[in-house]
Image (cartoon, rainbow, N blue to C red; front, top):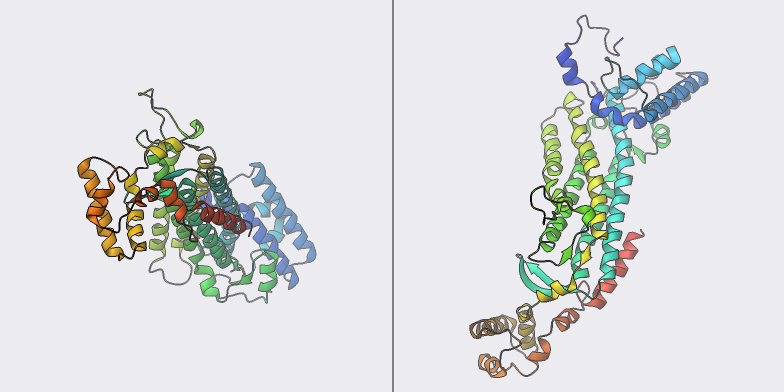
Length: 456
Ligand code: ARG
């Protein structure tokens, strides 16, 4: 018997059933659904709507249902529209009439909103751990390669020398903010809508706060109409996923470039690359390309849900069932991506020699300008003068280090013999000691701060 069949005479059209059913994707909510139902049975018993004995029967039956799902033996029947109907149908088979009392005052509307929050909170926990593991891998590599200098880029043009560790740590902080955003989103997911009923609230005097506490929620939703229709927490999660994805794909792009033969700054471990079926010499960065390419679907899930939610009237509408597949896919994809990214970083080989080859004196033109500033030349002017030196060196086919002092002095008398001491890659790096700079003391301090942030 259908849970809503009373007023119907005709059978649901077979295609309509296939169209409307969500069991094929929402069955993964089974643990949350069982957990929510056990707590709900407790709430019903507390107000005397079911006896203590019935509560025990229901609890034992629900635990049995969960065990069947866990063991993979749960049989989905044709009438099981979604996870809620499937669990209730099976519960009826297991415990008989008591199962018919469980749904008192409850609707699938407050039920699904509760299940989804419980499920997501659990997944947020594991994603949080995956993020930490990635940050640890980054931190480890940054520590291991503290002496390595490479060109830093803007516009993908060589800009100034920086420590390889400094580049790497830039991603640490991006992922740190992702972790903070995830924790923040979790706080707004920690709200229990159960007891909102279909939309108007619960008429049986249920203690919603006790129910929420039982389920481990921080608080109850303030408004039942909002409680059943609010999917902000899913949107926030998908926005978190999209931004984390953008960070992953940026890091992947850097590493794809640098592992190319042309750069050769890093070498990817064979475990994260593949060969070509045609060209025997190829070692393709598939892991990184997928970390970049998954952006389409992850960003798509965010815009997809926002579009679904736009213009929905209150309160529950079946449109809301569309909140799940994108969410589940984002969770699964990100979980795998974060673990793979950590593996790629952990096993990354660094080639300091190739980085050094890419470091020419042109990267020190800013230092040249800074030198004139210290002699009292305004920066706007010194920038121009350093540019003239770069051009002169280019004309003569030499680099800034090989340019005669006479040439420098012809450009500006404030240039003195000190320019040659200045034109040193390592000196340039070590000069940038201010907080957040690339000098090794500053990067060490940054790494220390990173450890503190990881532990909280
Ligand atoms: N499968 C539904 C969903 O995911 C459960 C809620 C159904 N509620 C309803 N009034 N039909 O949204």
